[in-house]
Length: 458
Picture (spheres, rainbow, N blue to C red):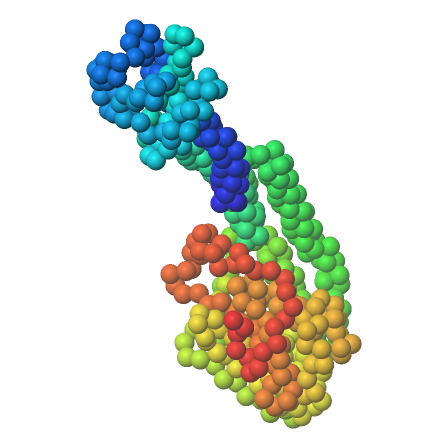
């Protein structure tokens, strides 16, 4: 914008300067010419008293030699009898015409102009004084005047461009601060606000941004409070379930029901803690450990259904900025989809890959695959009669860490879900705010990328 404003100021000021300079330059040139002609007329008229005294050629040449123009051989006198004193340059016919008409005139001659000034003598005779005006005299001072005007015009243009640049910097600075605040708010910094500045429109935009940020904080606070009340609302139903489980006879089903009730209570507690945790203090976990743990959990059901499975991990821990409970829930959703939407006996596998600071959790199966990969991760969309939330949750978890979710076809011909998460190291455990903004400012809701065989999209 600064460049645009500067160019506009440059164009407008240049046009205005040219509109005034061109006519003014012509006026200066014409004024210099008129000045030279007037000076020549004065010199010609100054010889009138001399001609009134004598018309002798010798006397006239001595008189001409005493003048500046005569000494420069730029002055001549044409007498009525045809004699000429001085150095003439004008054509004799022009001189005779000036004598007959009795009016002064100027004519182009070699090297300049010749002014013919008739002077009346006694007995009706007329002499003509010829004054030669060199071309340099006709343009004396014109070039200097043009240079001065060009300098003034250049200063005006430069000044206008500088003023436009300063005004543009003020506008651009306000817009840039508003954009930075918007990016910070989008990255999770709910405390960011802007000081409205700049033009009235940008000030209104800044006030609207502050109002929006305050409203977002209020809505999030209300949401956290509502989720925090969840435990109190579910306390009575959970207590009733515990009592009912206690009355059941001992057995595997009773133990499984009791474990499910305890797990439900732990999940509710995790949801409440997550709601009360600000984005500034997000948890981290080891992907390798959780993948092995969840695959071990699902392996029992896989053996019951006659499914072969494979797991490929990497050496050492790989930490990501995702809560342990959330990543475990996402893995359960992805593996649960394999059991839910493929026939018994269908093999599956899970692979961990670390590429360019990203870790990919890739789940493959040999089932029928996903008919509409582009809409599969949309919230509520499901082609198998489920809730349609599993892939949407996986997408949000991946993007919250700075990664993405890719949906494609596995090498076995079935579905391939690749959840790419950005890794962190020990030096990033503090997760400085400025680095967090740099990593996640670009995140946006988008359609899942379809890639084969599971590389992160570039």
